[in-house]
Image 1: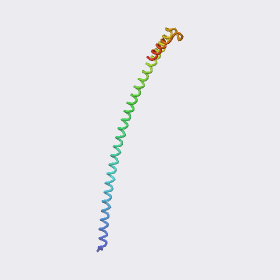
Image 2: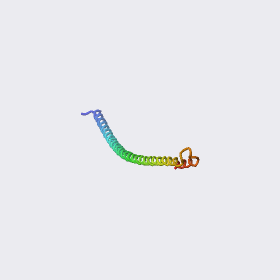
Image 3: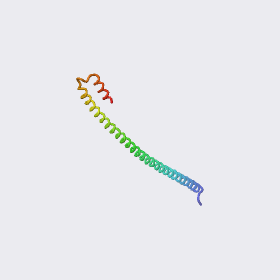
Length: 119
């Protein structure tokens, strides 16, 4: 006949085993939840990284186009300025020739040259 002490130990062991099983199930559930959240966070991070890469590529393309447009405008402006400087130099030479050179230029001729150089 089984001893009551053995029966109570057996009952306690069954309770401990049940508690361990419940703890393991809870731990597995919590771990599964953490893994799901980790996967979800990784997916969100990947989506954000992809969106950011597209935004950066678009921004870089937009800036490159803006810089090219500015460079083109600067080149055009430089060409205009060079053409104007050439015209002014030619006009200055013509004024010098018309008034007979620097010796006979006088104050009026100098004023004309200054006006021409300003425009």
